[in-house]
Length: 455
Ligand code: ASP
Image 1 (cartoon, protein in one colour):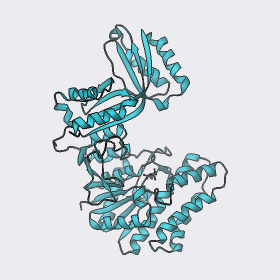
Image 2 (spheres, protein in one colour):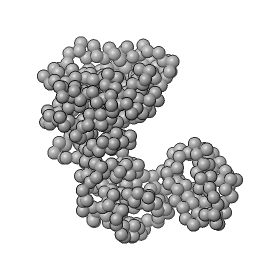
Image 3 (tube, protein in one colour):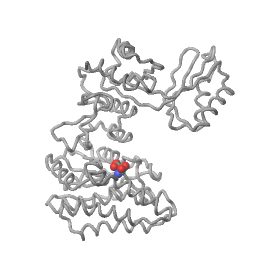
Image 4 (cartoon, rainbow, N blue to C red):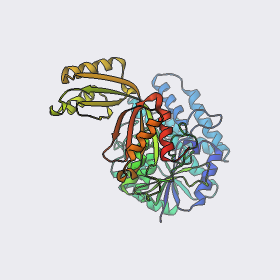
């Protein structure tokens, strides 16, 4: 059977109405057999996600503070949602009892305790949702990630799936043929039998791992937006929705801050070339955005214009730098030794820049960087600059195009945006411009206007 794995995010499971709507979505297409749920997210009157409430509870427990008020808030939220779906208080309590039991576990390892508690948001939601489906006559079954073989590394709060996942979880194919599988997102089990969660938003990764293991025909990722847009709506008025893009294009856009899907979620489906479709639970008429390995050559080479700010650069000048063997390596090693990761490293004849995310810098470290570079590399000049934005034009179609860079730079020149750096990655999938952060919006609008013939 060609099945779909469908993951519903926190906003799509935040109220009883939303859950009823999911039932409608499941019934609309019989191929929707494996359903992954997040914990309830924000909803009107509920400004805090269940996961955040659980994190608060853990912090209180570990600080020996009283936590019963938050714990009751969590329980009340589940009661409010599932009572309206006609589950009895006793039914709900019998499942929520598991949450109380979790607090009796050892707190000796804070990370392990944290993940045990925090994962309860997804786990309880799925148990209750499966019960609700059964109560309305739908053949459904909650599956625990341990029983399914969701094996992860013991890195609490940032676990990684183990390669065995894909093989072990293939056993769920049978269950999916018989019933609708309800699977909690966000966590797996270590070899020692402990729960370990992925990083935040990790239910996307759960869905992707299941899609891989089940050889799904499609991985539907349901959220509250129509799909991916060709520019950020905060930068450009009513940007076009992208109907289809490739995994690589998606990666380029998410690198520049298009946070639609958890970054690690693309890899498992990419291995088997399973399409991901981003869909909006609140707008079923919209077909969403499809992410695939190859897309049809559309009329557009450029798929999107993205930007992100908060970068800084260190630029060195040194006459005959090119003849000094190992110069680049020694420069980057300085950043590595200081525990800093770099984003780009464009170079010219006698100059080289290192561009970093500014957030990772503490004030004293800038001085240390400059002093160490001066001591170890003796540049003729070194300059640091802050408040840089990166603007990127993305599209697989750029590879074969002549004049594309000229078009982009002339759009920026017309808008009076000064380009400080240009980086055309070797994949030719994107061109990244470094500009002053104050010009970010102007630059995105200018590039969008030119490449999407708007305005
Ligand atoms: N509930 C978790 C979070 O808020 C995981 C998820 O929703 O994907 O990060």
